[in-house]
Length: 309
Image 1: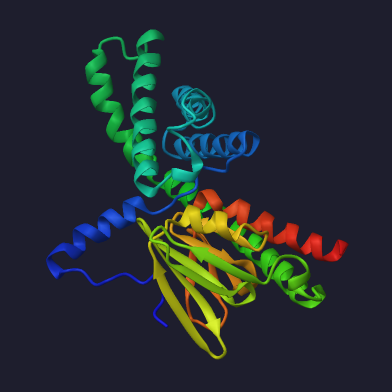
Image 2: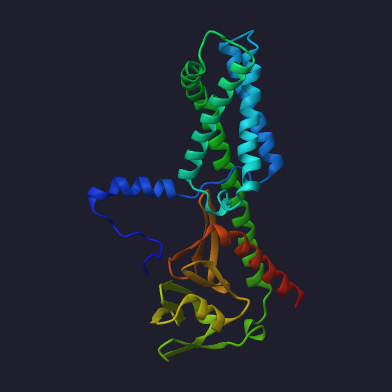
């Protein structure tokens, strides 16, 4: 069966632009999603800037001023701004493009406030403010390359390790569900009927359902029929399919996918999030960033239900 998340080839003349666009829209962690951890990360970056400048500008009091401004600007941007504009800094919608723009904005603020501090402290009094800015910005941009690269790698590695850890735990829970469940039929009705908007209907054993893929007002249901995999498209949106199934074993993992948890072979995780491999199909289903935590928690809850029963 064709992989559901595979992309159609595009015209060669459009590929570079599309690849860049895809790269900029790729998910990226909003720092460490924890104020205390972010404060330590920012303090580490400010300390690195201090040590770096001490090597090239020893015995200068300005380096302590620069390091302090770097800390204040980053902490205000990373920790305080999301509290004022939570929708803008929603971690679930943070992308590579947003991270790049946000990083450049912080560098601009660093240079501006360093120039303001020099002006207020009457350092280099003969140099006009605009000239201070023009002198400072090239230094800020050149000296920020290394700490910015290190910080980016730390963020990517952190989210990668976290997603791998959650995926491994989810796979352990799935294995426990397979081992300890006695009969899925005791938990929910086995036979399900889905009614479409055009009065068509589709009846199948729930235990045979694999997943549902939606496209606008249509949904395609995939289920096992012996060794074969069958599918049928109905005029019905995914929300309506979900409400008609209405049981603990289906989960909306993406705006376009509904999955039977019993059909998940294993979970994989990387820096971009999670994917669900469907048993016996070769299909991998993406998990949207906003649904990742919910999917992991639902798998754990099902395992707890089976153990209690």
